[in-house]
Length: 125
Length: 424
Image (cartoon, rainbow over all chains, first blue to last red; front, side):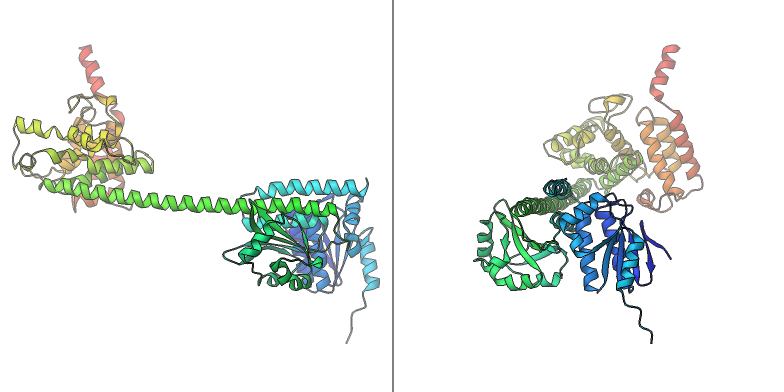
């Protein structure tokens, strides 16, 4: 089921949460995404896909908040994948080294497929 | 676009945002946290904190990202260490290189264990405001000379932002202290004036409490007329002091238990001018108090004293005090007569409006009384001053309603009479 955190859309596929970044990733929207990611991790998600299909621009605060999300995910043993990042933002992420910390998929489906290959099947008792 | 240009554009954007942020006078912690995010995001640093020099040797963590705040809680710095860091002039101190500064060497291990690589002292006007602590770059690469310049510029901005915020807080605090002191002074002034009013009334054994009541009636009328709180306070003071000139009038004349003769009357008529002379040299916190005392016996028809002014020449405040004064005189017992019935008083106000009293002022006073009588206002100050039963009559609301209607109709009866006379 898809939920929204004010203006942040998200949904879960198994233990993976897909969170959609807004058109301009700045302080306001960055904080909302961070809250949503934390909420998903707290509720047991083991992977996060942050989808940038709507995102045109990411500013410095947005970068800092994304690094914070990566940090929190790492501490929770969760993986982060960015998907559908436009060329300009991709170049920024490359330059700043974010793409050394997370995988980047062409779209949400590719991100989910890659994650499902990596993630072990759930344990059945 | 090559990477150096892209980095430059990204940094410029962050600097522009930072300039706007540090000028933000809103929430202090939010300003520092956002500023720190801007710095971290510019170079993609994974963790950072801003600590501010607090009281004595304490350092307060005002923003943190990517590390535990508790790791910074034990930080302390002495005055000598602060002084030695002022000389660094915002130069970044790389923890891996070590430092001769006692503060840096003391906490080096703890900070490195928390993921901090750089300490940048924030120096504003040759004073250490605090530190920016920064962790590693997301690329894992070493800091470049350009990075250090960016960090230095942004740290300077953050330092100035913190310094300015604290200055504004101090200014606001002092302004608040001044406001409280001013309020206290006004309170002392009001109490002194009330004590003085009581002293004036003691001289006249038949009119005890008169000045206090005139002050209160004046205040009620002014408020009903929509005056500002400051003006209302001012006219209340004027009411308290309107008879201060009686201090120079012979006590026997004031206390004469019968109608006074012409000579005594002339002596008594000196009191408004004498009051003005007493009050004029005092620097009152409200305007025109001496004039309200001087002209409270003037009449609209020019038959008042001391100057025989007419309508527009009389300050509105003096007209208010005049009505309050006459109303209290009519509604209190005197040595030679009992107080008049309310019906009689209303009739007097009606007859003398436009001659002695200003219609607008009478109307406002009648409205204030009606509000109390009908329960529209909870506070029944006029009712209390007039004593139990005086305004309880069934006719009272009608008397007041009719008086208000008459005052609304009666616009300058003196002029109308004059016109009628001229026409005849």
